[in-house]
Amino acid sequence: MVASVVIRGAETFTVPSFFVQGGAVGVLAIVFGLILTGRLVPRRVVSDIRSDRDERIAEMREEVITWRSAYEKSEAAREVSSNQVGELLELAKTTDQFIRALVTYPSPERRAP
Image 1 (cartoon, rainbow, N blue to C red):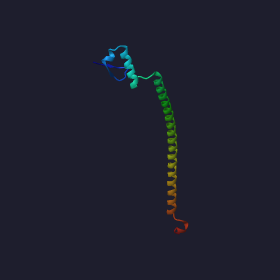
Image 2: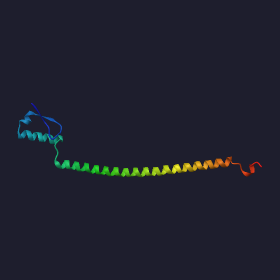
Image 3: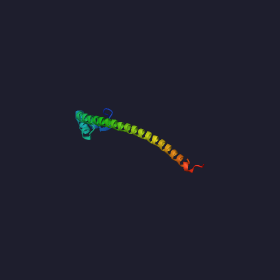
Image 4: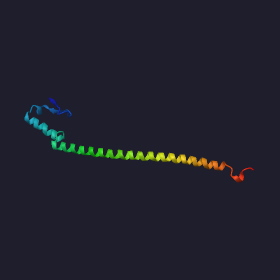
C-alpha cells in the first residue's frame, strides 16, 4: 500500500505504507527523507535565501533606475541634436539658394548696355 503526502502546497510524493503505519518511527523516517532530498530545510537557510533574493532585487531596481536615467538623458541629447541638424539643413538650403542666385545674376560687366 502507498500513501500520498502533500506538505503546504509542495509537490505530492508517495510514501510506502510501512512508514505511514509505523507511528513516530515512520514520521521520523519521512522527515529524515525530506531533509536528505532537500525538500525540508531549516528556517535560517530559507531566510538567508530570501534576504539574498531581496538584495538582488534591490540592486536590479537601482540598475533599472540608472539605465532609465541614462536613456532619458540620451533621448534629450538626441532631440537637441536632431533640432540642430534641422536648423543647419535650413541654413544650407538658404546658402545654396543664395549661391545659385549669384551665379545666375549677371555681373555689371556682363550686363548689356
